[in-house]
Structures are given as C-alpha cells and as structure tokens.
Image (cartoon, rainbow, N blue to C red; front, top):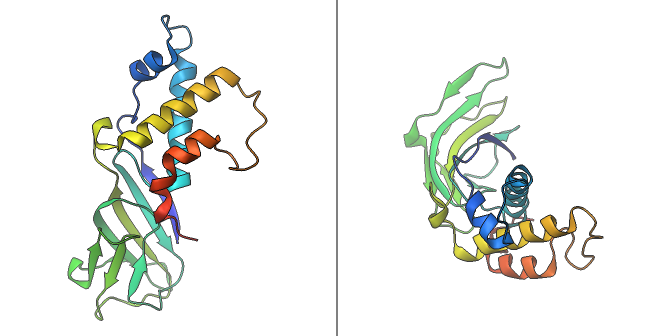
Length: 188
C-alpha cells in the first residue's frame, strides 16, 4: 500500500511564534530557517510515528486487489474515507459505493472492512482519506508538539553539524523518548 499526501496541513502543529519563543529568538532574521525546520521536523516525526498531526488529505494506492476483506491502513488517526476507486484492466476508474466498505478508525492500526459486494478490480484500488488529530495545533497531543519543538531547537543549534545518534537513527534520544508512546501504531 503506497501512501501519497494529496493536501498538506493548513497550519503547523508548532507556530513560528511558538518556536521563536522556545528558541528565545527576539529578532526575525532567521524566521525562514525556523519555518523550514518546523515543517521538516513535523514530516520526520509523522514518518517516525505514522501519525498525521494536523488534518491532511492522503491517497493510498493498492496495486492489486487485497486477498483479505480487512485492510490495515498505514496512517492514523483516520478522520474519514472520502472516496474509494477501483481500476479495471483497461485503466477505467469506478467509484465504489460507500455501502461496500466500513472504516474502523479506532482500531490499532485503523482498519477498512470490505463487504462481500466490494468490487474485485484487476488494475488496483485508490483510497482517498482525511487523516489527522484535528485542524488546529491544540488538537495534536502535547508530547508530540514538545518533541517537535525539541527537534527544531536541536537542528537550529547544530545547523547540520551533528553527527547523528547511532542508537536511535535520525532522532536524538530525548526526542525519541518523547514520541515513544505514540509509535505503537507502526506497521512493520
């Protein structure tokens, strides 16, 4: 299953003003850098946790028909399935009736139950969905927002000079510990 972001978040989980306060920056000379670090940090933490922080639109692509009537979705939390399309051997796309599937958003990981009447295409399936904790920074759990602040501060101070942390890969140990409770959804 290939996840593709269709529409990014309207805001970041940590605002520029919040990051500047955390960094104790008084001037605005490095606002572009801080803004870029916030986005990069969010993307890294979303990837590490497979959680979408602020509401976003995603498309999941299945290149072949699933054998099981239950699909585990690789992103969470899922707000809604907006549309499912099946693709036949000639590349013709058809929208699937919402009666032919049911979202299980509270499952760990979120699941999509397919009815017996779900079409069995030969060309693949596209699932459009909305995912995220909510539309505003306050909807994102505080530990995830704090981990993002810490990551931005680390990158801001090191400016790419850090050698990385061998025990945790790309994440500094303190950030990895901060997000650890949220990594249980990871699919391996």
